[in-house]
Image (cartoon, rainbow, N blue to C red; front, side):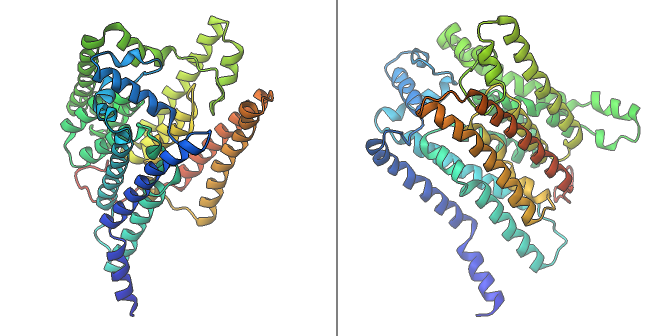
Length: 422
């Protein structure tokens, strides 16, 4: 068989629909495997939060508040959507897997529009192949993302909303993007609000400024930016009012206020956990530490917004990685918040295979260095708090090293979207 025919055959076999079907099959296989695993093993495969979702859905089905379920601190919409769990407990897991595949499809759609047009057919085939590999490796067949959705974690929904926002912005449907951002992404998780500064800048004409005076004029005379922010926040507030109407202050406290006052002293990847643990009986130092966590997050968000607003996937990747790394609470499920951008970010990077493997080794190694003392603490009862804290600091340093390395490898992409490169 000639090389051309082989490549054509391979392209048909690994077409985007086929890749999506295989990825969905892998997830569904794990969903049905979870029943056996949970029955046989003491450590469950199913996410503990999935039972929380299900209990809240049962409450809704019985005409009660989902917030009667202790530790349910999510939007009531999630409990409403998962009411079918009452009849079929795997419904939510299957739904999350489908949403996960939707994320992959959107990533393909966005990545394909970022491919250059003025290239040879052979080069176009190579770039298309790289695009498929990026989406497959970083999202569709990434063990972390596959397992998280199959275990019954709902974070794939906010990932879908965030990627859909980018997709709509690229199609210049910024009004609809504002509704999706505020009414879906921010409503399901508060953190996507950090994307507002970069969206505001991307919708402006500041890139055309030749001096500081023009920059300020374009910055403040940004009609589309103002409208986007107003619509996004209005959608969030509107849904907040609906939740308050149905469930009162309990909803407001559990869904929103809790996340601003939360002091999680259990060990997690955040280096703040140990200082918060030591100061849990001292309100003053607790507030100082909380402020200390917020300021670096806000500064990094603004810095990346002004620097990379013209490339939202790269901007949001850096902003989210910094936000998660500097957060007061950091668990492995938060990693998907920035991993979702990697298929798009990879198109902007000029990085060698050896450097890629080195960064991956550091990232996984940092987690391993943390998981070992965490295991001894949880299952052996050893006092390894200092070891865990030092490992958290190491992981923070690794994440910042990765950010710096990727920024150095970054190359602005020649975009097919003529009007604006988002």
